[in-house]
Length: 348
Ligand code: ADP
Ligand code: ZN
Image 1 (cartoon, protein in one colour):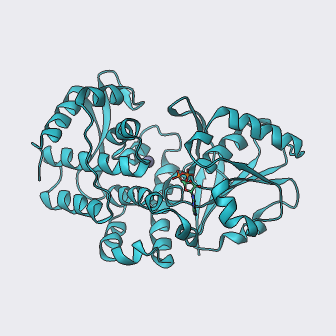
Image 2 (cartoon, protein in one colour):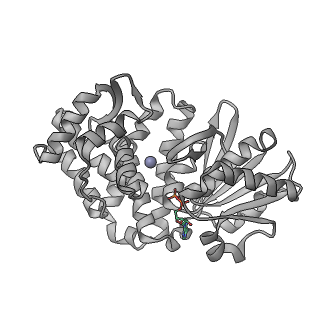
Image 3 (cartoon, rainbow, N blue to C red):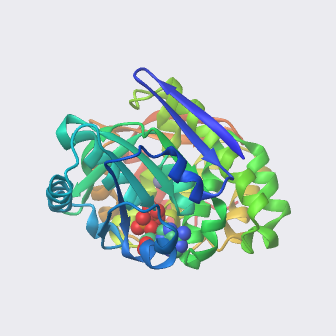
């Protein structure tokens, strides 16, 4: 078991990786604690939940809505939870985002912690303190930065995760390896079968490496002023793919990483060897589905992306493994590259 501490300007948060999630009961206050979870998690793990009230939401993105926050707040009031209360989120990214947002606004802020149950949330969403709900189809429009007191990542919980959710999370793990930790890439390359079997020890090692890297970035740039932008590797094209095709976040980010990698190669930022290494790794984890968004649509979606400033935008390139660089580039150039990519002009 390993504990990673994230220290920011106004909080200290501990992420525990590798222990048994049931130990969470020891971290809860004696009274006034409530669980928020989704119905899938409640069905699988509910029998082992600590003996406190459970508020359930529907699984999936549709629960990231303000009206869900409103209805949960009413339920907290009914349960007599005041400022000294505690909310425990048990679930994936959606449950953690909703729990974190609610905890940061309910009575101007109450304590919260998470048991993070999906690979995507363990390696990405539950570290960094971002919370939020969507406004219509636009993601995370209403949100806050708020570190939970603790996050528990028990990788045995990943065994019950549906295959597509598992691979979607794998994509963010690959991203972290590319931008921040080559030993993640080595493990993913050399132990593919065991990782596909979801062996606990390997997963614990991978998840803790990913969290350590993200924690180091977040500690230096809590509010995404600069450095933290490297975490968006693959996400410029990725968000467009996600919006256009509705595929899961990780699959879209994988398509975005492939494009960002080829773009970096085209600019002579990376070697052919590194380029092949990354595209092969994505293939190995069934993450190299092709995309075919018309360029005009791609441009429209990209200019709506919040990372844009004027006609230029920040784009994360790589200059090798562990060497992400953020550069401002004209949107026109980006779309020019994308058109060539679609025509198959950009090949390794
Ligand atoms: P994210 O991928 O951001 O974590 P969700 O919170 O929506 O998004 O989780 C994805 C889906 O996987 C949801 O349907 C959720 O109920 C389900 N899920 C999360 N963790 C587990 C788990 N450990 N076992 C089974 N299903 C899970
Ligand atoms: Zn992401």
